[in-house]
Image (cartoon, rainbow, N blue to C red):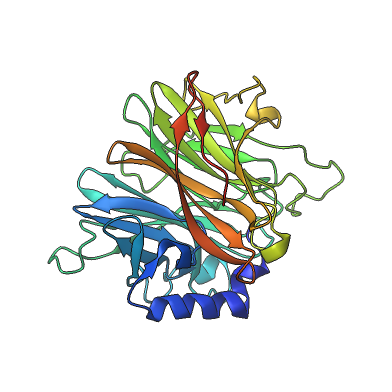
Amino acid sequence: MKSNFHLSFLWIVSMLIVGKSLSAQISDIRVHDPVVIKHDDTYHLFCTGRGIGHFTSKDLDNWASAEPIFSEKPSWTDEVVPDFRNHIWAPDVIHHNGQYYVYYSVSAFAKNTSAIGVVTNKTLDPEDADFKWVDHGIVIQSHPNRDLWNAIDPNIIFDEEGTAWMSFGSFWDGLKLVKLAPSLTKIAEPQEWYTVARRKRSFELADKDPGDAALEAPFIFKKDNWYYLFLSWDLCCRGENSTYKVVVGRSRDVEGPYFDEDGKNLFHGGGSLVIRGNKNWYGAGHCSVYNFEEKDYLFFHAYDASDKGISKLKIKEIYWTSDGWPKVRPLD
């Protein structure tokens, strides 16, 4: 669940400052919810922001701001969130069958008045004659007092048969997994859903209340015949009060069940710690995981204690234990 910090004056001003710069070191890139893909020799990072934030890099260290995907809000968004202001959350990006797909979240703070949309492009090179973003609208939508889940934070994974699945969710009754149609723009029929992770939620809370089961931002990464489900626990977007951390579980099957290092099912609140905040970084979370140039990387954001708790990009190389669990070095 995203907080008012996303909409705070300080955060907006900081994004504008970065947007005006020609380039910046990784320590200066101010982002929430980063996802990355490589097109030719260029890395493209998409993140929460006006029209979906966008940065590029040749080396994962020096980054330049780029044009957002949407110069104006998608036409359908006011139907989901009245007076939507084009502040789009938590994208995911994939390349499939010659097209780039960017999934994105539209939501109202502290409500599951939410939807996940998708936009496509044949190329990420703005100089290419085929460069054009085409929006396909809503893939899935959640409604208060109907759904005990929240349609934000999408991530796409393909199983062994090449079938696409979307994991998503925030708070309420946990993180969901749903099968997508071959078009990748809608849910497959008949619909097939799973709950892949959840935490204990107080029974007395009303359905429209996000609740106290603080988890969100699933990301599934396939390695060595295992599906690894990374997710974020606790609270983001609160500056010095952020308590975000990343945990993980794994399964042989994409639909789960996922278990942590101690054998606890993520459906029952399990999760092995990958990274957390410290005195220098108040919280660390909303990760994505990739293999680039034969190395595995964890991308995430963390809140800089030396810079007013502003959220910044962090990248950690993943190393793996002998029994196949992902580890990263702590934040400096």
